Every structure is written in structure tokens, then in C-alpha cells.
Length: 208
Image (tube, rainbow, N blue to C red; front, side):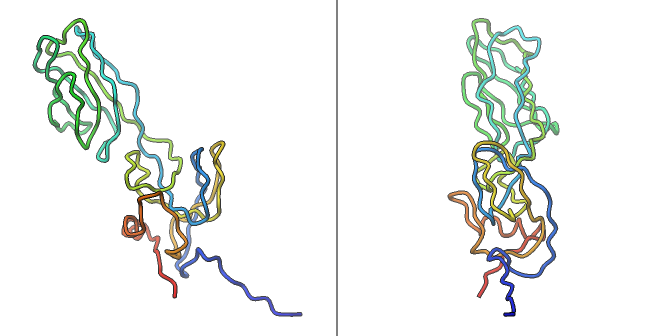
């Protein structure tokens, strides 16, 4: 009988011990073995107005790269005809730049627009923007993401087709992997994630 030779998968890059976990790949993706995974850790909730006199709205809420979990509270501090200024306080109680009615809020912490209504806002009117923990479903790491999936957490051990629906897979939380065998979202390169992966004991190696 001829002796069999075991050839490790091209993905493997060394003998550092692997710890694996079950992951859920978010629908709409077909990921190859070696995909670098990020988890969705943040999600926006519905805006809650206070007992306001003004009947304007707060729309266009958006996560940003520095969004925190918890409530962002917007409170009118200056009333004006067809306008006004709102104080913005983050979930840890830190005051951010003030927001102006009818002007999109440009900030790395949170995004929104306060819209004027038929009845003007008065001092003390408010809105709360909740940011909750995300689904923990996994996406291909994209450095431009803002829902937490920009942070790498695992390497997909086998291909997963989640094109039509969420699908389960196995992710390696530690180990050594061939840098040439990983995959990332367009515009994201290994240099963008290599240090963050190493901090989690996931090492990318260049094989000779």
C-alpha cells in the first residue's frame, strides 16, 4: 500500500493552537474559507421624542466609527423661529458639539438631523437616540464599517454560503494562518487588520 501524505489546507500558516467557535454569517454573503470575520456589535434603535412642544422630528440617524452603546440625548437649549440649538450628550455623559435644527449633524460619534416642524421647539424639548448591542452576526471585515464589524474577531474555517439566509459556520478565534489565503472586503487589506488580529492571538504568516 502506498503511503499517504497529509497536506494541510492552504489556509494554515503555522502550529499555534486554534480555538474555534460557532458563528452566524449574516445573509447576503457567500464567504470563502479564510474570510476574516467581524461581528455586528452595535445597532440603532428608534428615536424617542420627549414631551415636546415643538412637533419637529429627528431623522437620518446613523452609526459612526466612535458610536457608543447607550442613549444619546439631544436637548433644546436655544429656541428660535423655525430653528434652534440642541445640546448633544453621549451615553457616558460627555457633551458633544451642539446640533443646529435643519443641519445634518457631522460627528464621529453619531449622525442625525433635527427637522423643524409647524410648531417651533422650546427650551427643554428633547430626543433620545438609543444604540443597542448588535446581533453578533458576522460579516466580512470592512475597515469602513461602523457597526462593529470593522473589527476582526475570527477566521472562517470553511466556506459558508449565506446568500439567501443567515448560515452557520466555524470561526477560528486563535491560530496561525496563511496571509495569502485570507479574504477581506474590497478596499480593506491585510495591513488594516494584522495588528488587531494579533492582539487576539490570530497571526497572519507569509509562507515561503
